[in-house]
Image 1 (spheres, rainbow, N blue to C red):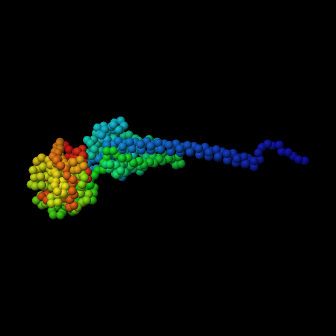
Image 2: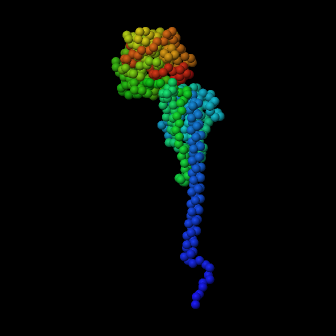
Length: 430
C-alpha cells in the first residue's frame, strides 16, 4: 500500500538551497549599491579638488601677473620659497587689482598656506618697494586675510611651491615665476573616496627685472683675518695686502653690524684680481654708505680704472668734497660730479651711488645724507662714452686711498632707477 505525504513545507535541503540563493542576491544588490555610491562619491571628490585647484591656481596667476614686482627690502626678497609652508611675497602700488581693502596706499601681499587653505595676507601702507624693513612684520603688521581655496579641501605645507628664473626669451630678461599646487579632499578614513588635483603654471612678471646685484660687501664677518666675503657672488676681497682697514660699528645698522675704516695715511685697501663680473660694458650701478674723515686728494671709494690705459671706471670723493664718477673709453673719459662740499668730514654719513647706462646716454651720481631729506644729484657729462673694460684688479679704496668708513658696498650689472636708488637710501631715512 502506497502512502502519499501531503505536507507542503520545505525539506531541510530545500531550505538551505533557498537561503543560499537569497543570500547571493542580497550580496549582489548591496555590492552594486556600494560600488555605484563609491563611484559617485569619488567623482564628487575629484570635482571638488579640481575646482578648488583651478580657483586657487587662477588666483595665484592673476596676482603674479598684476603685481608691481616681488616684495623686497634693502636686504633682498621678502619671499621664502624654502620655508614650510613657502611664502611668495608680491608688491602692489594700490588695491586696483586686489579684493576689498588690502594694501591701501601700497604694500605687500603674501601667498602661503594657512589652516590647509591657500591664503593671501595683506601688509598695507608701505613706503615703497625695496625700502628698509619691508619684510619686518613688527613694522608692517598683517592686515586682512583672504583665502583662495575652501575648507572642503586640504592644501598641505608641502603641496605648494614657487621657483623663479629669468625669461631669456623676453626682450628685457624679465623674471618668470613657476607655481606648483596640489589640492586634495579630506579622507575621513575613506581612502577610496579621496582625490587629488595637481597643476603647474609659469607666469612672466610684467614689472620684475632680474636684480642685477653682482657683488655685495657687508663687512660683517668678525674674524681674525681680513678676507671679506661677497654676500651674493664669488668676488671675495682680500684686505690685508699693504695695510688692513679696521672693523668698526656699521654706518646704517646697529651693533653687531660692522663696517671698514680705511686710513689714508696707511694706504688701506681691499682688492680682488681681475673679476670678470665687475668688468661692466653696457651698464652698471655702484653704491655704498660712507663717512669721510679727511679730504686731501681723490679719495677712491671704488676703483676699477686705469689712467694709463684710459680704461674702466672710478668712483671717488674729490678734495673739495665733490662726489665724482668717471668712465673711460680707451682714449678719453666722461664724468659726472656733484658740487663741492657735498661730502663733509664732520661725521655725517652718506649713501652714494654712480649709475651708468650707455644705451640711454646716462652717467650720473647721487648723494644722500643720512637722516636729511633730499638728494644731491650730479651734473652729467655732455657726452657719455662707451665703457672700455680695465682687465686689472678692482679696489675698494685705492691710490691716495679713501680716508673714512665704508659700509654696504654693492655692484649691479644694470642701471638702477631713481626709485631703486631711493629704496637703498631708505635705511638712513629720517
